[in-house]
Length: 323
Image 1 (cartoon, rainbow, N blue to C red):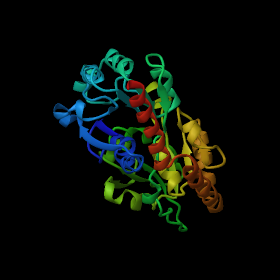
Image 2 (spheres, rainbow, N blue to C red):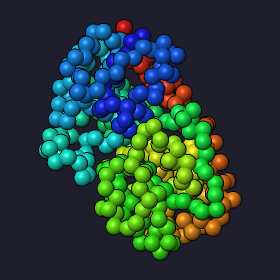
Image 3 (cartoon, rainbow, N blue to C red):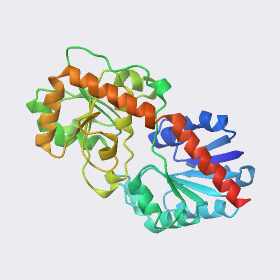
Image 4 (cartoon, rainbow, N blue to C red):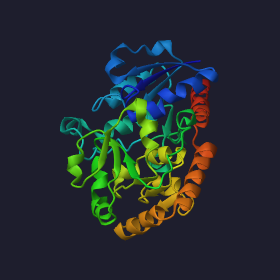
């Protein structure tokens, strides 16, 4: 079987990397030969050359339904959803925000032969417009996460993210300063916007795991708002794959990924954040225990091999249904 994947961009972007590129070897093993085009290349897409088309999170803002409807007339389309793209992205590009139309996302969902959602929040929305929805969480290629966090006498609190998510760290500034912590921040963007001192490392794909290995406690703060409830918790999976205990806000899928008291802690307010971080900072044995439990959970539930099998099952099913 042949599949055409239309992605938001290159492998350096998180969504294409976790939802498409890392799945390709597993799909190939299951008899699916895939071609990947970014949205800049969509103009040369040839739907008749594929048995199924997978659209990763929409092709172009404002034109989402145009492309999906065009392709759906020729071949079954599977729509992959790992963000709440029906909502304007907070702090996003103002031009793209102006182009945003929830109705275009709804039309794309309706014309799809099936929808793959990264979590239950996204799936619940998609089911309003399409009955064929499967939840397939983002996954981790454990071959790239074989190095556990570096254990030393100096515990390091750390965070990994993007330019747009960097502001999520700001509310923790008073806690870091109270604890005398200078967190390690792995991201793009300007760390000066945080307003407190950090050890900053600009994110690079080729050294991502090596940088993560320097974190001994991973944090994942999130505000409880609709856009954030749609997130798929990849940074938490990264921490756990590295054997790093996690402290996270109980927002959206993070409440499911972090087993409170087992793989890390959930922190509902600043008092919780202070208490949970202090506890981990003063108990290296607990850190090691929670880190090992997190790694085991990724091995059992969130591997790239598992995700590839689930995606392959969806693709085979929609092609069979169209025949």
